[in-house]
Image (cartoon, rainbow, N blue to C red; front, side, top):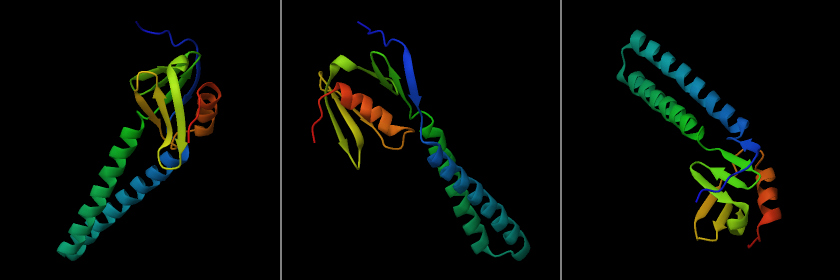
Length: 138
């Protein structure tokens, strides 16, 4: 039986400051990649090619990280919350723990764990909403 989530209250994607930092790293690594390719073209030394390749790897890894973080979203509804493909109803939350390392760990009555990272925009709003409904344990 599927529970009706109700009206959408808020959407919390990855924090914009983290996306901005990753974008700056991606842009700078691409500029350094192009600079190393130009230097390799002019000086014909293999070290510049290797350095350019390293900057390209950093660039591609950063772009992959940005792309993967786009799916990292929590949606708060009247009757529960969605994180990726998991829905947890407010009435099904048995315990909510907050930690510095993991963020917010929600344990449902059926034993399913849902971890909400601190890297989300307005994490405090999510934590306050869950804390107001679920029992907390530290």
